[in-house]
Length: 84
Image 1: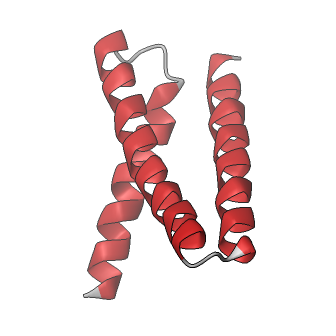
Image 2 (image 1 turned 90 degrees about the horizontal axis):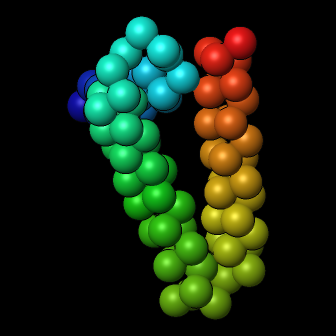
Protein backbone atom coordinates (compact mmCIF):
# COMPACT_ATOMS: atom_id res chain seq x y z
CA UNK A 1 0.00 0.00 0.00
CA UNK A 2 2.84 2.37 0.83
CA UNK A 3 4.43 1.72 -2.57
CA UNK A 4 1.21 2.60 -4.39
CA UNK A 5 0.76 5.82 -2.40
CA UNK A 6 4.37 6.82 -3.02
CA UNK A 7 4.08 6.09 -6.75
CA UNK A 8 0.88 8.11 -7.16
CA UNK A 9 2.19 10.99 -5.06
CA UNK A 10 5.47 11.06 -7.00
CA UNK A 11 3.64 10.93 -10.32
CA UNK A 12 1.36 13.85 -9.45
CA UNK A 13 4.00 16.09 -7.89
CA UNK A 14 6.86 15.41 -10.31
CA UNK A 15 4.51 15.68 -13.28
CA UNK A 16 3.17 18.98 -12.02
CA UNK A 17 6.67 20.37 -11.45
CA UNK A 18 7.79 19.36 -14.94
CA UNK A 19 4.77 21.09 -16.52
CA UNK A 20 5.49 24.39 -14.78
CA UNK A 21 8.24 25.48 -17.13
CA UNK A 22 7.02 24.03 -20.42
CA UNK A 23 6.02 26.65 -22.98
CA UNK A 24 4.16 24.09 -25.10
CA UNK A 25 1.60 23.53 -22.33
CA UNK A 26 -1.25 26.08 -22.14
CA UNK A 27 -0.94 28.74 -19.45
CA UNK A 28 -4.10 27.54 -17.70
CA UNK A 29 -2.65 24.05 -17.18
CA UNK A 30 0.67 25.47 -15.96
CA UNK A 31 -1.14 27.62 -13.42
CA UNK A 32 -3.24 24.63 -12.32
CA UNK A 33 -0.09 22.51 -11.97
CA UNK A 34 1.56 25.26 -9.94
CA UNK A 35 -1.43 25.45 -7.62
CA UNK A 36 -1.38 21.67 -7.13
CA UNK A 37 2.33 21.67 -6.31
CA UNK A 38 2.01 24.58 -3.89
CA UNK A 39 -0.98 23.00 -2.13
CA UNK A 40 0.68 19.60 -1.75
CA UNK A 41 4.05 20.84 -0.54
CA UNK A 42 2.49 23.69 1.42
CA UNK A 43 0.25 21.24 3.24
CA UNK A 44 3.12 18.96 4.14
CA UNK A 45 5.37 21.80 5.28
CA UNK A 46 2.48 23.45 7.11
CA UNK A 47 1.80 20.22 8.98
CA UNK A 48 5.45 19.92 9.98
CA UNK A 49 5.59 23.53 11.16
CA UNK A 50 2.29 23.14 13.04
CA UNK A 51 3.58 20.05 14.82
CA UNK A 52 6.78 21.90 15.65
CA UNK A 53 4.84 24.79 17.18
CA UNK A 54 2.37 22.62 19.08
CA UNK A 55 5.11 20.32 20.46
CA UNK A 56 7.49 23.26 20.98
CA UNK A 57 10.10 21.41 18.96
CA UNK A 58 12.78 23.60 17.39
CA UNK A 59 13.91 20.67 15.27
CA UNK A 60 10.61 20.42 13.42
CA UNK A 61 10.53 24.19 12.91
CA UNK A 62 14.03 24.12 11.41
CA UNK A 63 13.08 21.19 9.17
CA UNK A 64 9.95 23.05 8.03
CA UNK A 65 11.93 26.20 7.23
CA UNK A 66 14.56 24.17 5.38
CA UNK A 67 11.88 22.44 3.32
CA UNK A 68 10.39 25.79 2.35
CA UNK A 69 13.78 27.05 1.16
CA UNK A 70 14.64 23.82 -0.68
CA UNK A 71 11.23 23.66 -2.36
CA UNK A 72 11.54 27.26 -3.55
CA UNK A 73 15.02 26.62 -4.97
CA UNK A 74 13.86 23.41 -6.67
CA UNK A 75 10.90 25.08 -8.37
CA UNK A 76 13.01 28.07 -9.42
CA UNK A 77 15.72 25.85 -10.97
CA UNK A 78 13.17 23.63 -12.71
CA UNK A 79 11.33 26.56 -14.29
CA UNK A 80 14.60 28.25 -15.25
CA UNK A 81 15.88 25.01 -16.87
CA UNK A 82 12.73 24.62 -18.97
CA UNK A 83 12.72 28.24 -20.10
CA UNK A 84 16.24 28.17 -21.48
